[in-house]
Image 1: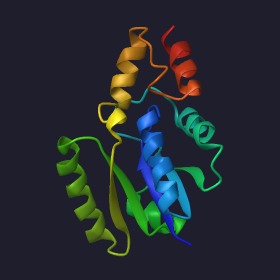
Image 2: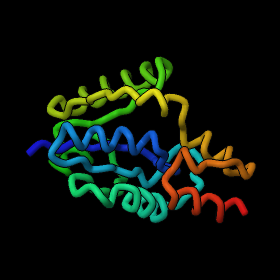
Image 3: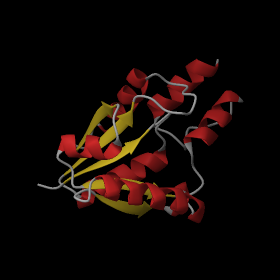
Length: 158
């Protein structure tokens, strides 16, 4: 059985994240979405909210599970029995940072491979930061995020 993790902050999860998650689930027997408890970014949503929103969004796919973590990504991958870390790339600008992280992760644990997945064209512009900014100004985010996220952000910003 092949297991991959898809780590991130998911503050909030977007349809772009879900596209990568669902595509990864076609390649691996199991995909574990790893939600980092802490971040150097200022978070809008609690870890509990982020986990619940992702669980709701992936509930229809039994190959996908959701876990929070507070360790190095490679340690989380090893703990989950994963052989791959999935990383989404939206643009060339993402590549440099992700490439450096992949090299560091390989140095920390050469048994865990980083796999890059290109964003689908319809999501190449999409980021959690952009979603939060649009929501903060009462913009329509209905096509950018799952319904549960849309409702959560509307209640947060109203």
